[in-house]
Image (cartoon, rainbow over all chains, first blue to last red; front, side):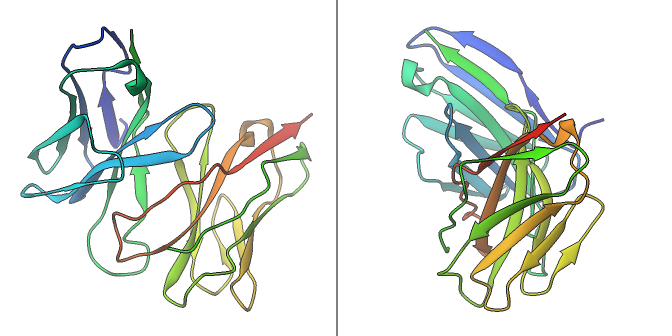
Length: 116
Length: 111
């Protein structure tokens, strides 16, 4: 089984709808992240969480919110979806600690979102 | 974190070594070099990382120049399944939030 899973894998929604993307991990990592990727571009960080009680905005958090329900679960919500939020969304996790390599991030398979 | 510069695309013959360069001339002493790849819109896959010594694992080798201003990822025997976008990322390990992906190098492995 995959260490980082995302649901749904594909989603089509309409402008103004609220949707939630979910991420679960079995790696036992404290840190979790949400990224979006637009065609032909690299990944941009939306939100990140160092633990259940710690949530931080990334570089493009406007229009998004997150919830860290448990160490293993991190959800991304679009409160009122708009067409320019059409993108590929990735969840990632990383281990804690300050040793070399602890910052390595492991990514889920992605959710392809289309907002009409 | 230091910026990185990679060629937008490269070709490689199947079975040959693929050498992917990355320039990071503004890298600082506590920044690591990470390599990831993304195969056709799948989740990015961790390949290897290093600080100043050359590193090798089951996937690839990482060669970092002595001045650390550039590095090369080597796939010793490229296969068609290695066709992907390869990202070179330079970051301070303690900055868990700072993991910026640029536009990477599209490696095309050809039969």
